[in-house]
Amino acid sequence: MENLGITREQADRLLDEYIKDPITKLHLLESEAIMRALAKKFGENEEAWGVIGLLHDIDWDLTKNDTAQHCVKCQEILREAGGSEFLIETIQSHGYGMDSIPVLSDKERSTNLEHCLVAAETLTGLIIASTLMQPNKKLSSLTLQSLKKKFKNKGFAARCNRDLIRECEKAGIPLDEFLGIGLFALQGIGGKLGF
Image (cartoon, rainbow, N blue to C red; front, side, top):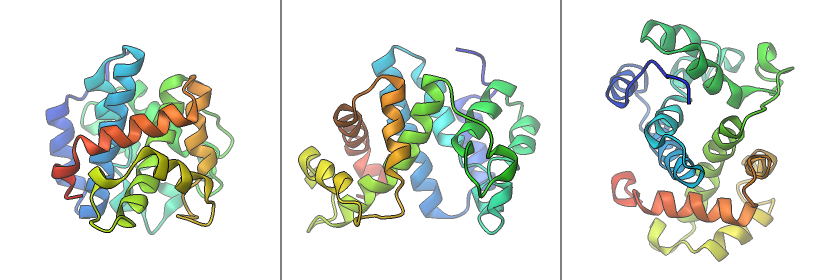
């Protein structure tokens, strides 16, 4: 894997500086956990994949009211911090094909890492929404069977784009296996997340 130019410690400092919304911070920690689990599956660098997951929405607090700048503003933040072009392009890839981000709308994801990032960060929403439906609102109570049912129910967490989650298959991971990897990764940090 190419150099990211940013360590986990530097990534933490960037989060403290740019992410003030606690919900966004949780989403980034969740994305990091799933990306680390996916790196382990592929025999890739867990720390690097984790940093990519952790930083993928580093510009969200600055762009949530101007989504055309999401995945664009991150360039200057990451460059200034020493981030490599590889890191920047990988992070930007989760916005590829989105009409809401005109400068990225004609680009397509092509690597396993890019497919995993968009699938993982999207899956976090489905898992947390499913967890909140549990009587005790704990990740430990959510079963893989229940998560699979929630995935199939398009009326549940309707804004969670199932097609993006299915990009795991473009990385060679069957959907059911991917749902399990994501769920078990988040269950592993449930205490840290408060779920």
